[in-house]
Length: 629
Image 1 (cartoon, helix red, strand yellow):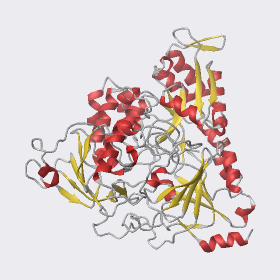
Image 2 (cartoon, one colour):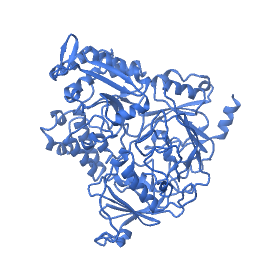
Image 3 (tube, one colour):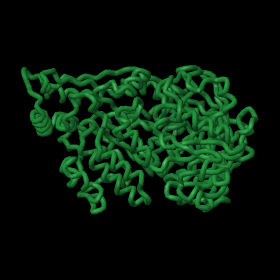
Image 4 (cartoon, one colour):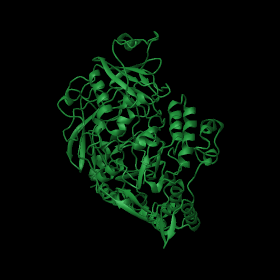
């Protein structure tokens, strides 16, 4: 039921001048102001640890001999920036305007590429190496001479510098926020780009910069970057846009003579001749599309369908294969977020009352076939979840805020109540009523009123009809408490516009955490981001304590310090009752027409079961399916 999307990170602006003071050209090319040499490497990571040596041939988890060919088709399950699960009308997926097409990241390369068996390590892609200053504020990337755009023109440092600068100035709000601490990017020559960062940048900001797409400066000299468009941009990645129909499907064609195909970070990947995304507005209709072989691969997010509907002929005769793979990625936090920018949600007792009105046990048993586990934390499925009393290390971070945060922070962390599974647990509803009364919300003629005398009404905002059953019993319980609760289902475009404008009472969304959270914490929890249009701080959290703990996490110098800081942050966030946590499943339930193969053991940090990056087409299997028609 949970939907996966990967948000990005954060960074900013400042000074770097060639020939100015200590930061001279000679300094940028190889020595610091104190005469210390830059440390050059084939890769980079948050804490400097790398699994693979400079001469590695391929990532351990791929099949370097995987054949090329075939079609992989699916529906979107990941999104970022302006993308939607249900539609698209633009090939610019990096700005606020329009609905960006899924898969556009396939058409561009970045400076470095991530290893899926390490939490945050990256290795040379368009850049063959990176040299880092002793203070870790200046990064010098050396580009590969063979790097090319699809038209054969060379990728230069000028393209990289222009891309980073343009994304910082004109990109989607999330990208702009995440580039806040990138001071400057500039080309020293065609092969060398230097990126400098502010002193207070987080350890993961350079990683984020190295992951961003490289655009053609020449192409955008005649195409405005900040506009939504169906013009296909000039790319450089393993795929380029092929056939498409706005709002219905988009197909990407593998570049047969791609310049990067034999790089260590690419061997065994990008094996399909075509990757296609189909768009449906309804989950049930999308399922019918899969069972009719309108697309070939489906990760099932609806427990009802997984439990009851995979009994069609192709499943029974083996043409469709079902597989459940472990999901070891951080599960993140999916829930209903209450908009504290609105006065009716300012009192934490009101927000807590909503937690007592939601019966997860009934919902999971009745609607979701018992397939899910209750979330308690935005750091779910990691060791960063706070448990038990604070450790001495956590207390050291929390003590400065004693008296400013709830006393609960110094004891057991808040865990959502467990119901009797009836759907209307009287004990929990009495607790909710008590909290509302304590907050000054009175009852008159079975109707609940705010302290200012206004009727207490709330609207749940969603963009999927399939979520209606999950809201019905919850809304009924709220109505029993005298609250005028209702559900508003809008289309994907309107939903995104209202979310970005914070125009909602309660909205359902998911926070996706990286394995090494850093600057990405600010868009979720930062006070500044509470007023930033398009940020992920949906609840409107404004908390000096949370801000300080976010900075502690960002400044952590080891994974152990990071874990402690995130656990302390988790305690304060959960004590604020900003959300009603929902559910998660630490597996990937997959169904696919049996035309594919994948590595026997997928890497721990592979998104969406490594699909389709690491999978490949099996011509013999596909032929058998054709014969069985």
